[in-house]
Length: 165
Image 1 (tube, helix red, strand yellow):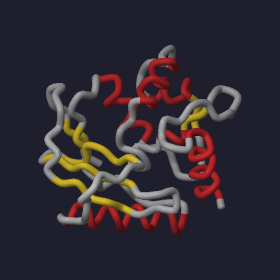
Image 2 (cartoon, rainbow, N blue to C red):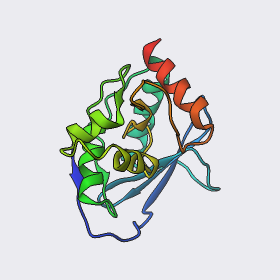
Image 3 (cartoon, rainbow, N blue to C red):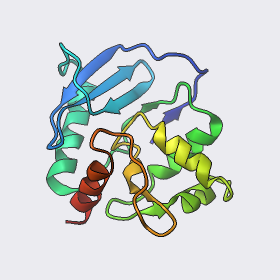
Image 4 (cartoon, one colour):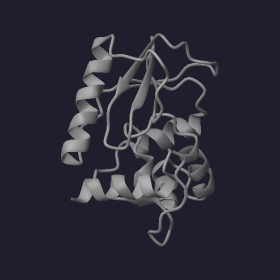
């Protein structure tokens, strides 16, 4: 798994690709450094036009067919992330499909056990859905709190159910 740290700036959208999912189309945006964004939205004219996007499409298809996919080989563009967000996202990628961790536990894994609110803020800013599986992070009591993707908590619950089916 590779994360590249670069100065904060707007990532150039070198390649945009459309990926079909049961929850609607997702769009990946790739820069020269890696995956910059994976979101549920569909800009006009988006298509698969490079090998990385086709590989990601295979991973996304596998995920929605089986409830699990190994996204660890997908290089990410961490442009604009703080060092703390970088660590949180790295640790979030380690959460096993079908399991959840609390915001507090993820904060501990990221090296700052008192930063559960900051972890929540990082999760709300996650622009690389599924690959950084923020849907696996839950409140202290195991309840679902917030999910910024379209469909909100229903989408989060769908993904968690898919992984445990």
